[in-house]
Image 1 (cartoon, helix red, strand yellow):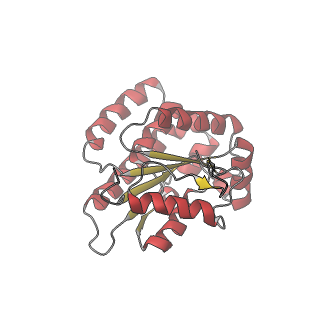
Image 2 (cartoon, rainbow, N blue to C red; image 1 turned 180 degrees about the vertical axis):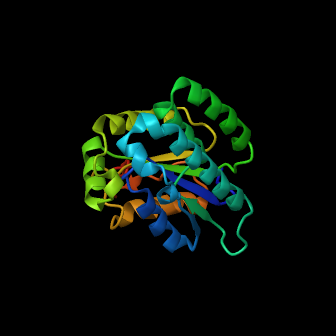
Image 3 (tube, helix red, strand yellow; image 1 turned 90 degrees about the horizontal axis):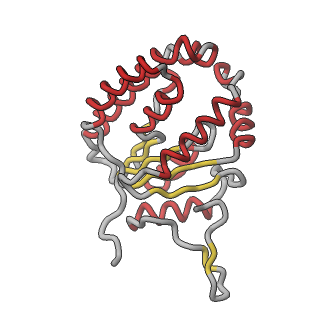
Length: 224
């Protein structure tokens, strides 16, 4: 049975440096969609967190949690001038970072607050999960030259990458499209963009296969 409506609220997710913002911007340009970006640069604790994770994990995480919740409240009010909303983060991903960085007594307090807030957060219709090889992600982080990311810890990024993969392996709240961007440049890759757009517009739960023209179909490279 064909889907009856398009996906109206779409989230692009993945680790730092995987290409979330780029994809949101390209999709929004084609869909005339509203964009909601994570306000990570407004977190005053973030530079200190990358310098000393143990000392600043809790303050960093609580700031992010409340900032993301404030954005989600505004998002839930809707937008009369756009049929589609695109965001570069999923509210529930906040807990991924909390589980990695918080001490047990901090996590207990965080969980109580998180459970209270998440009930009022809108659920997306579709998640596009971007992943990439760790070496590729680290190179992209270095290339963009943000001062507070200059000494990004490889072990932390490896743990974060694994945590994201585990999180989306168990995610059931909405369909998830997974794209491996290791060899895909989302700034110029038109084929991947077109297939994501088709999934959004048709309400599809997966990306269509690439027709080879010889009676067989194969998954689009970089897309799972």
